[in-house]
Image (cartoon, rainbow, N blue to C red; front, side, top):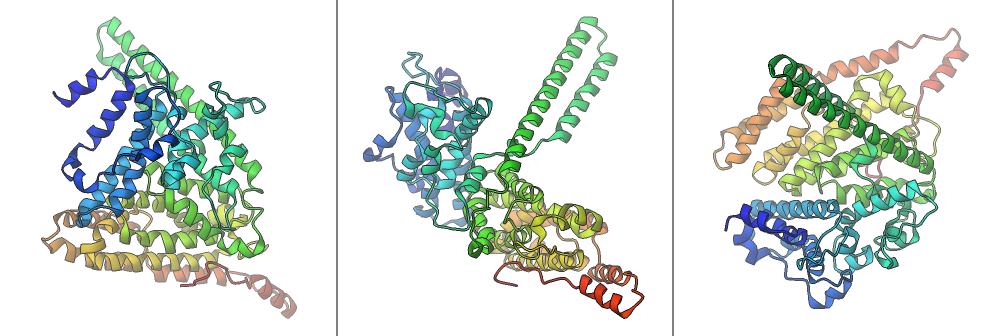
Length: 535
């Protein structure tokens, strides 16, 4: 029976849910005997949500198995083919993300017996403590629980003093998923790091890209496109009824988009208001001895586990910490954060799959874009970075990082990325694929110096002439073409250094020695404190 016919014949959502996993994993059925995660052991079934229907229990167990499959395919696989293992890991990740999205969007599921019993998503998902007992990774458990946390937060925001019961059973309600509730905070994964508060950890994992950004340009572009279709319909459709029907359809779509945009703007303002109110408490409780480890703790517990889950999560990570910088969050050093991102996140390409490399490229591009803008626009730097609390030379210091100091640090970051990229491309058989996937995403923000582009092109020539790895060869040709197209935007590092020195020399000379001494002391800035391991 064809797969499409099987899908159409499935009358119940629970059956379709199981078919979804099987259809998505069909290309790897031949390797199932090497990688398949064993069925959920019998002794773990009591941890699943209590349900009277066997189909609900089956869907819940299948959900848990899909969460466990990713790590099992990586650490318990018997085939040593790296490329195939990476593709299988990405496929397990894709199945899990789509399954979570499918279940969370379904408001109710009917049982296989057709009794009509409804089963919301929160009844299918165990709580965080039970998922931890099922050996599900914290980032996967929180990813699966995020729709419930968002729904509970939205209901609490509308009626802050009211409870949110969904069923008579208190354990089967959204109350336990409220971000500010004790039930959720007590079930968070244990953290022995004193440099990260549970409040920031919960805020980071409970929000999504929809909460912290509004794609106004995309909405405006789509609305303009539909308006152009109205003009085309007015000219080309000669039949009045057909023209009127097409124009009405376009106008309804425009009205829906406008209403949706206004709703998201209102939701965004609510989230930003909440973050503004919490900016002093997110990291304000960190003791002074632990403040230099905040950036490392954020990378370890927040960014690294989430940045490679989906492209949306990668973009969220970059925008979220940019928002913390804009809000001037207490004890959050933007300089130390960006320094750790360059030194710790970019080298992940040495052990990244294809999908993870694409996500890293999205995250790094969104992170480097404002850094590049600040490097070439001093007025923008003074307004968006130099005046912010995160650009203090040290946490708690009143002195800010000057533009000249930032240019020096930016050059060190650029050199660090160049060192890793050149090493990866010189060993292209092991790391070239992931490195090229990241570099393709970074076109326009890296490289910015002509001599770095020349070094990269030299290594790309060697990759393009080899015949052993056709896929890497094709990506090298593509990146080489993109790099050559961007040559007009690259600059000479010597010219940039001369401009910086020229800006220093333009300071007017004081009239007396006492004034000159005072001016020299004012221009003399303290050393910027970055990471512990200066490189």
